[in-house]
Length: 220
Image (tube, rainbow, N blue to C red; front, side):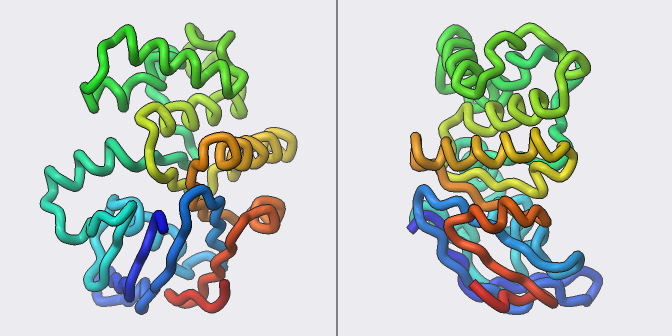
């Protein structure tokens, strides 16, 4: 089991957003979370990804109880074990594609700059963007920018990657290519993905599908 969430609740301004959500996700699964806007999907993703804390309940990733960690411990765990891919790639415009990919590994600080660069180039080669290492984000297509974001999420070899509408800003062809890439990574490296999406193609491809409505999981 890669992820276990038990009875998560979350409110903002006394408005309940999550109302006792529990789920389990296994290593190597590509999991989709779907539901109408306002159902609590992104809030659930933020709690699972440690970007926010639940009001009550527990989250475990790879056996580690995250709700027991202090802020500095949680930050270290997040940088080492979790990757993020968002609808808008959030690449730093002044840096090259290669530099953007390397940044999380620089922050982690466990490898030399030469080792980080070598790993980043290998990742970019695997993702088919090795010819774009020296390009700035403004010189890349939308699909290429999102692949750089995926490489950045992978650089620290995370246990799980959380993605929030990762293909929402892509055309149909690039969205399909990104979806295929997720499943290739899952197959080749047993990479776990948890993806909030409105994309029906991706939802149908997923190994596991969670449906949310009104702050609860209504179907799996």
